[in-house]
Length: 606
Image 1 (spheres, rainbow, N blue to C red):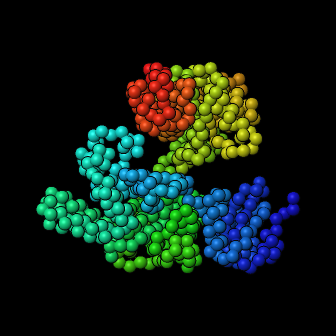
Image 2 (spheres, one colour):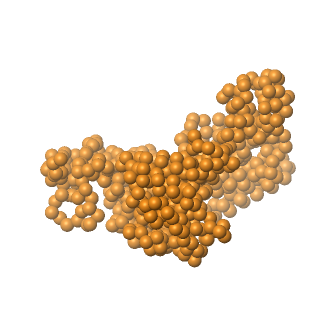
Image 3 (cartoon, one colour):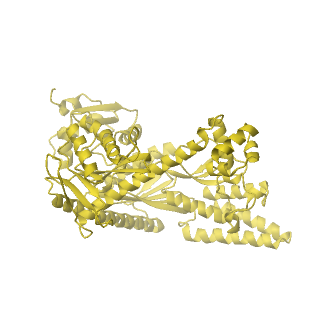
């Protein structure tokens, strides 16, 4: 294969805008970047000017560069962040935020709308407000809406079967439309006020409430007038605590801090002048980059799937500020401004966000230092040739041999790597045979690794004794992976946390020895944490499988009950427990369920 010539490639590129993708020998993506002038930008990597070590390492691995032309630099910015999200390149600063963003949802497609937490794709019908920086800020907003406007938040199946008010009514979080304690028109007014509040139009809500209070007072309905007055005071009190200067505006305050090759970005959000919460992000692969570079990478990825507010206040200036403003303005349909040197109250919020980012990063670094120390202690205790880059731990969960689930969790020096967690539903084994279960999990995990796919762990932990360990050693030998260190973790004679017995293979004949580091060992703390996480992950999968099995054994095996009837039953009665509690008469009241079929259902469930 001919050696890659970057200078020659750069000379053949256009001087127009576009995106370039640098790839390694195995076609893995090393870096994605944008350029207003592709020839000039790509050529800069291969000229004689000195470059930092990180760039030199990247250049040494380049085997090919692909480019995609765009009509403008703004288009290139959008495409760059799409590809960073898709490829997760090794040398780009990456925003580790794989979850979809949370929203407040109002189910306007229901006769009596409810307020709810929503994450995922948005559908037609409900009204959505957000997105919010964190799930906690969404729940806080829902809690506030219930306090101020008494909107229901119960599931529709629960709402449909109430015959008396629930606790939410008693604590004045709902006006109980389920039992007609409020008429539809009045409840619709509550919902309208809540939606205005969520849109940031609190002053309009207060003016409405004042009109209602005056009307109630003129009609000598003083109890109602007093209730509305209390609502007005609560709204004003909330405004006094949460509004930025001026009392209005959509602003995101974004601050970055870097230290020891790691970075933290703090986002503090205001919508309609109301502080809706804050969240810390920890971008990966930030080593060698300053705060301005981190913020520049963060902006494109963070606002890739969300609309930027009218104002962005940054802790540090970013390159291509005007480009970001133009792109965000075009996407949101309104002018978006970015400033790094605010005054007055915004400067106070920026400084607070920067302090929070620095504090969050120090906390993370201290935790990372602890785990790094534990990795070193474990390496020394086990006399490993090199410190493991990652640890994989396996566990099996079942109840009396049924619904067996295997789990694999992964830890590195930064803690859990949840993107590499795996669960395995096990089939074809004798119930209760933990040895066979462990063997099947390990084969499924390492079959692809033997074929060159996946990441090789530095150490394998097996939750179990010498029997499970022997199976693990045999599987690794079968796939040519015997060089990976492996260890069993048994409960020990005391059967207490920290007193586990470590089972170690010591010879080719699979003879084993054991050690018990004890609770004072930092290595023991690490192994205990990893093993407990594998146990938790396995149990969670087992419970979910058992719950599905209980529904299946309850309805799916009854003749005459197909998917439509099963869904109707579960929806009407709020789940399998409600179906079990129902009598023949109640069951036969469901459309499509005859009295004969209702008897059959009742008999099958009892």
